[in-house]
Length: 478
Image (cartoon, rainbow, N blue to C red):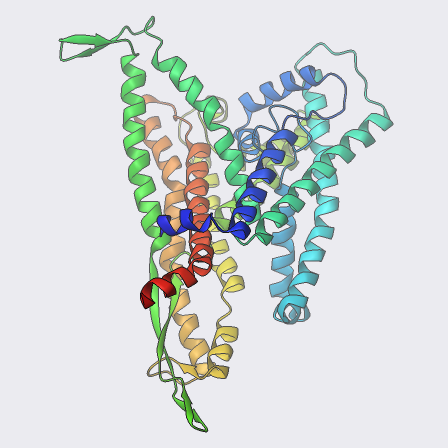
């Protein structure tokens, strides 16, 4: 990364305008997270949400990626989940239907049509999820005996569902506006902002626990003096801080790992001028899909859990709904004692195994979409470029596919193992203390934050180098 170049590029009006637009969109997004759904007393539903967050790790993840929208019962409660699900559906159909695949390869026009279909599919998905969330929360207020004199009418339902659907579509629009600025993926950036927005609350809770010396006393430093901090909390925070730094280091290395392929350009003579005869490089990242497989896998696993919650809300004794909720809910400190009264059983490994498989599959799937080897091979052939020892055209495409598949294999395994780290940590704590520490969500959040931050910095670096290119050229002349 050229951080000096990035800061230097901010003097450029266009670059500064792009950055300010993104920051403005993120601020507007945080304001939306504070607007409550217009349905009865917001405080009553917040109490129901608090009860739901205590019972469900899935609800905690929704709250995380919505930037606290679930906990505050805001209009962005549904978040970007419908758009992500719609993207998965459209991309799966693109691979399954030849005409759609042909359309996706039809340049910018085809991609615009596919994006438009994704937006259209997002609307009914947002409506269905809005109805499901409101119904679950309203029934939770009744089952938890939370005092409320409010009985929603058809008009209340229509207004609430409309506002939540509109909130989800506004987030989709904001994400696309950020993407248009050319500084990272908009959807990933909004999820990044959602996770970061929860840090002040987390830090405040840790600080309160750290300076609580009434329970375990103060921390003694070699018997010389005492620090006014809780010793147990201090060592836990220190241990996890070190572990987090190590994980971040390896995440950065994984994201930066790439295979460099040398491209040769044939020398051509046109009149008295000659062209080509130079070398270039084609970098292929080990994890070209970035954090998208993790987001897709989590969104994909969230749907069965949501359906299970709806079924059990309607019929509390329904075994199928209870099975969906238990199987597709991540093992955590909140649900471990209730879901696994006999300790670790085979059922405990179902969710982590499904999560690993989906991350692995989506890594291959998404890479095949963003890295079209046939298109790259055709472009190289048109430009007179070739890989040494490889024939242009179909042979080059096969060679690139072989390289990408090998990189994907290691990249998908690495990404899957990183996603499994929180579950491995939970397993160790279960063996030692009898209960997990509940880091599944924070681990996923850390993975998203690090990967998105690196992707956005890389995009800013590329644009900054392009903007300041003339300055470098002038300096080289001097």
